Length: 200
Ligand SMILES: CC(C)(COP(=O)(O)OP(=O)(O)OC[C@H]1O[C@@H](n2cnc3c(N)ncnc32)[C@H](O)[C@@H]1OP(=O)(O)O)[C@@H](O)C(=O)NCCC(=O)NCCS
Image 1: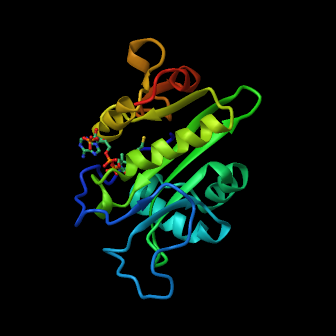
Image 2: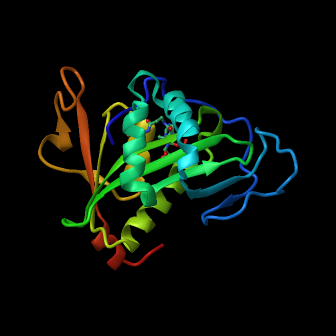
Image 3: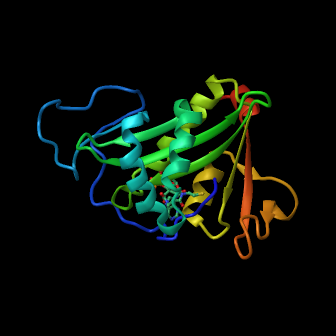
């Protein structure tokens, strides 16, 4: 993806996740006031009405390198079916993942992945990635790529555990990829080969 959070990767979660759905669905306890810190999360496709909250979350996670509102809007317009959010039912989103796809070449780039600071280290980043990879596979996508700041240990470990591997020479390191001093590592996942392999 394009960016790495400038706010660090070590946020601690305050409590364990109560329930997690990998399907679109209604929020738990409809009508009841929800506690934002304990509300169960629902993973669902992003909606147009999520855009202001997505912008807030993206800024929380990525700070000064957050997507501008206009670009987030256009990414949503292009890739809505591959834009997933974690909704806590209180009007707040706690995580998102976005993949851009090229139907012609059957490939894809992960363009954004972020989890709210107070919800990290509870498996949500992994759940978002597993869900988007499943959707991409069902859409016929065969290759997935992303960029990551080489020092972003949390993200690198997550991606590698999902089967992503460096692409190209120098361990996938591309110096000044996003401009002077903004090195990135390119990771690649062969989704077709993974689909053919026995699933754990
Ligand atoms: C990267 C990020 C999405 C991970 O989300 P998360 O919900 O905390 O991750 P998970 O709890 O699902 O952890 C999945 C794996 O990631 C790795 N990981 C996550 N956080 C880690 C940390 N602080 N230190 C080391 N490894 C970490 C581990 O391998 C972990 O697997 P394990 O729990 O079996 O050890 C989150 O840290 C984040 O939003 N970071 C800021 C935005 C960002 O950098 N996005 C990626 C840009 S390329």
